[in-house]
Length: 52
Image 1 (tube, helix red, strand yellow):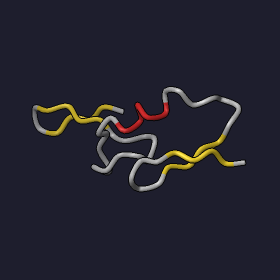
Image 2: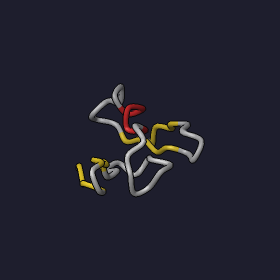
Image 3: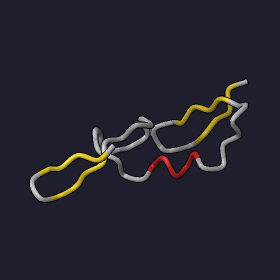
Image 4: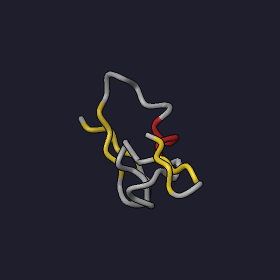
């Protein structure tokens, strides 16, 4: 979700993975190869684990 900060456009993190909360840092790109039928959790270091 874009927001204007002065003359700059910033994006609000919607996935919860950004290290720069509340702003997006592109961390959501880690999720591009996830399968829709599965659930995953991410550790603080970005390691993904599938929930069984």
